[in-house]
Length: 188
Image: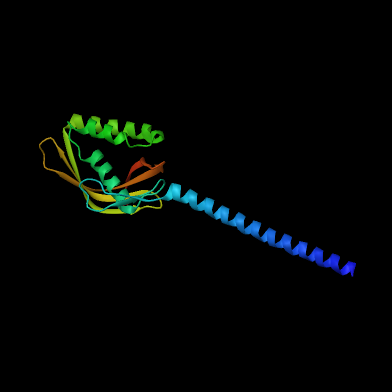
């Protein structure tokens, strides 16, 4: 009889350890899931923002923004760079550089300085009229195509179809412009 009671006690203890082990694994799994959810809530929580002069809200988080926000940023930066006169070019390019990722500023500074020099020397006025825009929120990129009208002095405007790509880096809730490039046409 003693032998049977000892086996029953061992079985009860084994079942108890199995139950405690199962509870431990479930508790550990729940804590890991909660930790992941807390991290996501802290970094990916979207905030609705409605800026002045725009009727629809944007959804932005710490490391991602929606398509309409990226489109509006792109259009703002296009306007700062391309809608220029000899009197406004320096101020607008300086404003644009405030939003450029610091690691990307050197190349763009040189390019903007060359553009400003040509604009002032030749008395150039330019205006960009957007005809197509497409945002890629997963890549933080926007492609913009439109007509660039350029006046040199008092001449008639010269029209040209241009395409640009703007790449953004979202760091700690701030969208930085990391690339402002022209897409060459396939005809060239």
